[in-house]
Length: 75
Image (cartoon, rainbow, N blue to C red; front, side, top):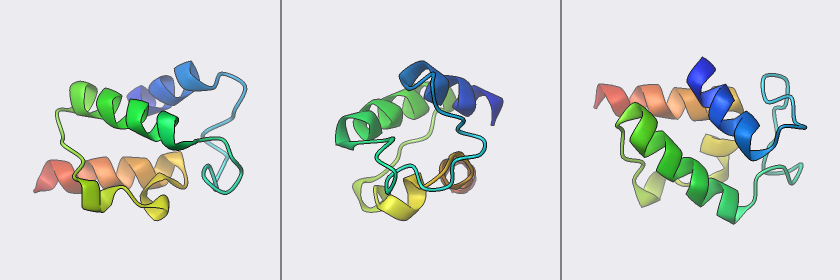
């Protein structure tokens, strides 16, 4: 989780990602951020995020993103 928070902090250092629970709705992450994040997650955690998993619920918070990474890592 710490590595994920570091990736997110590099994108938006002003945001407290540990506390924010609506990154999409609050406008913190836009589509370009999501693409960048997917690339970083793929290289850092060696998991591929398929297109069908790119939905707002999976990117709503750092916890949701981490849960997605863990789920995909188990598959």
